[in-house]
Image 1 (tube, rainbow, N blue to C red):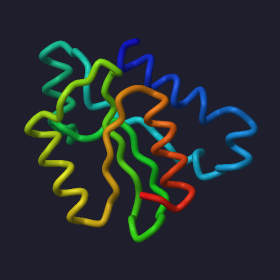
Image 2 (cartoon, helix red, strand yellow):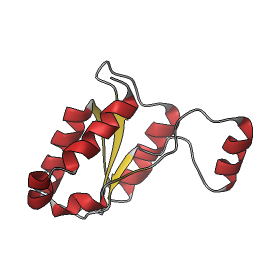
Image 3 (cartoon, rainbow, N blue to C red):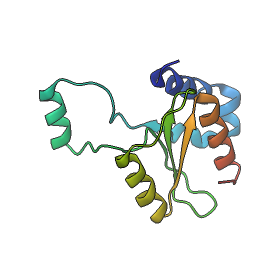
Image 4 (spheres, one colour):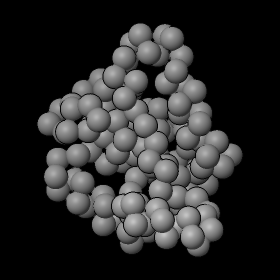
Length: 121
């Protein structure tokens, strides 16, 4: 599966009625479209509008267990590493009391969301 497919699977899971009933906060979960290939003009316009390298893929603006919200950096199941910009964002977000995790595949992202919403970190 591609990273896109994994992210879609997270949102497909989050839209299920039984999941929404148990975790109504998931209505606030959103994707931050910073990645992807763009032509040079569009890339320039997005940078001018504030798009920044390394920002995590998903954000849940729900406070839990001393954190202001949860950021998730998605990776495929085959792995991947956090790049320099992604590591910088992880450090800055954690320093400012946000939870930051990376998930290898959609199942890992779902497990992270459940753990966070149930009060874990």
